[in-house]
Length: 121
Image (tube, rainbow, N blue to C red; front, side):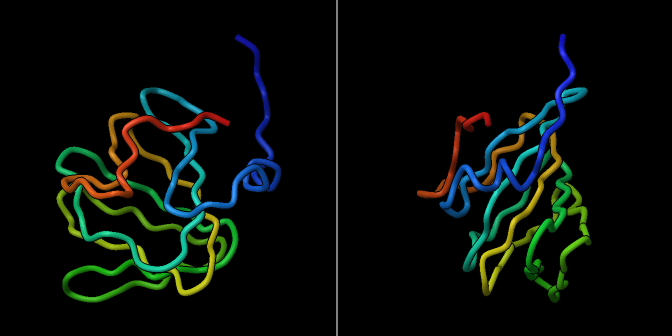
């Protein structure tokens, strides 16, 4: 096994679409994913997985059924399993996700944004 560093700016430059996570690393059954967000996502929850959203560039709002939390560049939020949520980005934002490899991006719902197999960068 060879060790490799990951340059986030270089990886983000490889794609321009939104709501389509890419895998850039794996450890202990977890995946490190990069995604660009813009606009509102689908309301959903994850029955078995917690999710970490770390803002690399920009900001977004994590909407919850009882309010919303603004997450800015350099900040992260952990959404616990079972909590219904919807990320909303008024402008494009670059986000690093850290979550179990089993995590489906749309959780308990299937939409045109559901990604069953993720590209690896």
